[in-house]
Image (cartoon, rainbow, N blue to C red; front, side, top):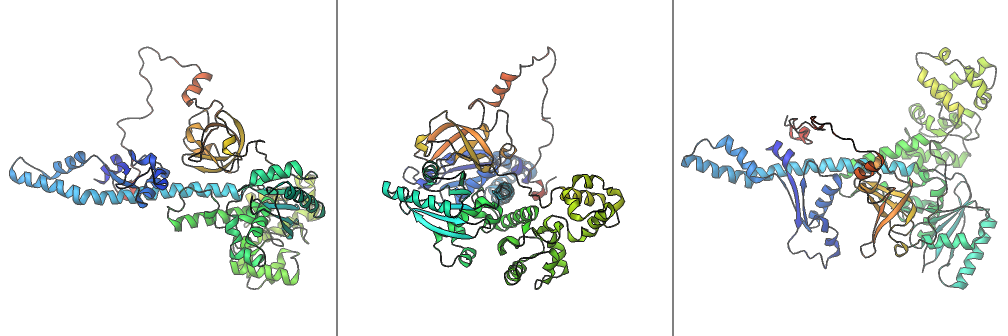
Length: 581
């Protein structure tokens, strides 16, 4: 029975009795599943989770079972041994047993197994999207103006220095009449001059495109780029304990503007302050195992922070708490020590921090950077325990460590084999030399400003066939969502992601990727935009292949090649759980 359910069970969903989708918009969201059936073993994670959510909200009825006659036939062969009346009673008992007990038990096991599989896939997609978002290219240490846009309530404007410190904030009303718009221009021009603004970050929420166009067309930017920044989760941060501790006297919207500006400067440092589930790059994240999801997302954040490294003289408690070896308490002690004694001048000064013992120092030191410190290696990923090796290299060449860092010719003369010891192998030495070539290098890509198509600001401006630039905001199991600057992300279905067959959308797209898409359809009433990334939208992969490659004629008398052996046993995706061999 377990093998039968695993191999041949069908997931069937139908509209629940008493539900009127014509008058209930929440029910209408599940219209694709009012009459749906597919194999349980092949059902993708997003459909399983969607049907389960519809059942939980009592809009759908959901069953998972194979053909009833086939299941009863299997049981009858085992237990019904003859044609007599007694065998007839056994047959009745077999049928009653299956319908009332066994089928329900097997369906429960299948539901658990399919949910676990769907959870794993959804968590994997969420984790990968989060990593791409956290590793987005930073603008760097620039003086930034952050704008949280709005129509009626105005736009909250802040000016930040190169370390992200708030210097100035005000509210302007560029969309409330010409008089107020003129005053807004004067205020922005004055702030840009007074605070020597080097870049302008505009949130992509309500009035985002309109505010971006206003700033580009009417403000004296003096060469400063205007960048539309994804503000997902900014409101969550502005109401958080971290924001209240940093800006106790400021309004929530002002804190949100600060977050928008800092996201442009360094997305990683700002996004770690927000619960990853609030960032908006997941797929049914509220329906999956929350403990497994949180563990996976925390691992991603820790990996990204340690990969990039942390400037110990600039980072806050939240960011440093993700460094390996540091707890929230130790991170707070480092910040407290820095505030009381001034910036750290060397990594060895970290040993004077309260409760930061030798073991914690050994774990965290390689991930903490000290820019312009006493030792040039403190700004690199070289661990302090490897400093003596670099010192010997410099001594053997008759130069200083700083010369070894700055002079490629000196580094080329180092014979790594001669420095191999029992504790320091050749791979470690190779990594050290790579780090000396680019000390403190940032693994993230170089920042490039992006601009949406001009004049396209709302879904009503879209027309079928338009070719537009966009940014991927989320990748799911069924496609990718792309922001084209109209306040509503469009969906590129998996069938429209490339001219070839695409099995996994993540093979083609990733969060923050710049793409060009073609508008296929716009449904303003349902707030749906269909897009395509194909060179010829709507053409099937097989048809596209035939256009570029002539069809191969089959030779007479030969059998066509097959891709699957029909006699091969079915690969049971639930075998580990069910234990059937």
